[in-house]
Amino acid sequence: MATNFFGLKKSSSSGALNAMEGDGFEYSLGPPDSGFSIFLADRTKKIHFIRHAEGFHNVATKETGSNDCLLRGDEPASAHPLYDSRLTAKGIAQSEALRTHLASRPSGARSFTAFDLVVVSPLTRTCETALHVFGQPREPGKPAFLDQMDAPKNSPEYASGVKVAPPRFLVREECRERWGHYVCDGRRSITEIAAEFPGFDFSEMVHDEDVFYSDARESDEHCCDRAVRFLQWLNSRPEKCIAVVTHSSFLRHLFGQFGETLKADDRDDLQRLAGNCELRSVILCSHGVKDGQKVDPLMPPPANPSTVRMGSVYEKPLSM
Image (cartoon, rainbow, N blue to C red; front, side, top):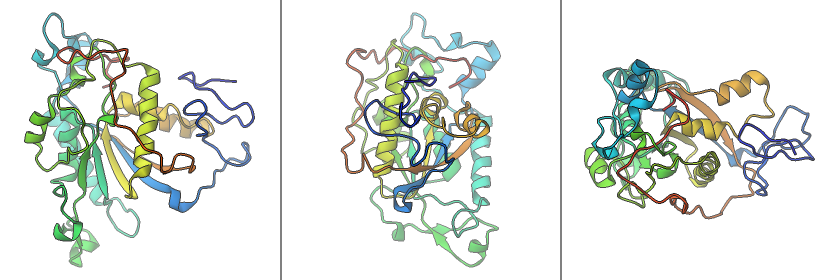
């Protein structure tokens, strides 16, 4: 069997790429050379992936030309000024620019893009990005009809007095950045983060402290595996239009597993490194083989014991 960049095996019969060996999750249906895939509409949903906006750690690596400035040295990672790095003023401006873009980006029958749900990595820079892109979220547990706001200004819907509900912000550990070695990728306790972002829904977080954060880098295989399991969780959600605010290396490990049957330009667009505050929209299509299966909460790999006060590691410079 042939393999792709991450060493995943292709089916010898169809040439399709398996996300996980033996799971039956192949990226093409029907004749492999047809150039098309057909899915039942009920098994599809639109996912808008957004990389966080510029953080202070991005500036530091650009100015120094390497990731060495993100190493913890002899001090605990949590004592480093770039630990769980925040957005710069430029990053906030990038987020607000994306908000303006979405307010005039047609989607469905509307002149703007509205979301049923926003899923957010628990790191500070993704929470900040979500807040500046989407505004205040709907309160956890509050039905949409009790939390209505005006449609975006200058839209036909606004002129007609149309009201829309802000989306919920649901925080999930599965879409956090690849952990290990560099300080920017550790997170503060959920107790502390939730106090700063009171409208976010942290009810599905399992661990208060960052039990995943250690000197050992998360393996490519583990990051790829949790990325596919995150897709499985997204597929289980009832919402049809979902935004995910996440990180560049996580997206690289996710998208790097897909696109082998696409033409080269499309594959490159899917798999290339995401820029700060870049929006990349895809259609998630379920083959039905995993529907209804339980998705267990993310747990740290047993071979990598937690060293929560130590740094996290990145594979490529300037990629966080």
